[in-house]
Length: 273
Image (tube, rainbow, N blue to C red; front, side, top):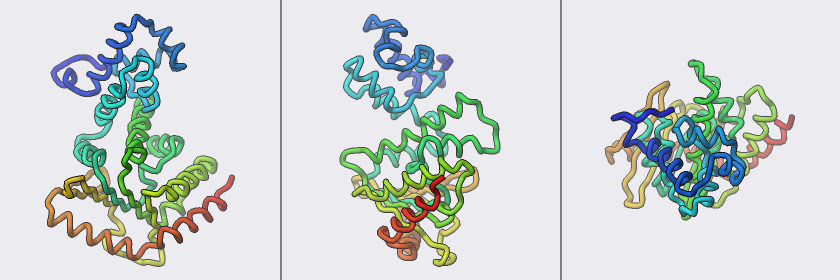
């Protein structure tokens, strides 16, 4: 249980847990009644109210409907899920959530494109053992980020994926096939472009360094460099511009979105279990 103390009492996660319990009690429902209405397990709902678990977006949407609270719980959940990320990443997450343009270069399947099964497998392979509850929470937090791709109006998003991302499968063939299918499907979305940086492009600027560039509605921009167990948020305009130029070089060396989709679709067919 998340105990109330000076560090948690003002956190969005604590506020969400308290609000979930307050709304249920104010409605006169028992946990058993709420479980029946929402089709979610009673124990699971109890753990949301104590802050032990962080739900997925559909759970909050269902509870907002039950309580008639508009999008109150969804908004609180979007803030609370930041608690699942490490401090160095939270500032970037806040920028990402409100960005109007998102450009990413990745050496692994980006979290914004991962299926639930792939995310669960990837997060379980870390060097530090992870409990089932912590794994569930991390998966929920990662999938929660994908909500920004369904925003209205949607941001303009471009992914440049190193070819190795698509050529290095996980051992579960069904999980890998579903993951490649997900990438191909997303590539056909109107506001999303996916390009593959082929091996034949050789070594490029930043070709070994994951990068994210974000632009806000006021035209301000930030860059985020992710290293081995560390990350760096860059807000200086001149430095951000330098990384933008490096990203543009990668984009020019990559396959076109059309040719990239053709390659991905080919790999989808080849990966069928």
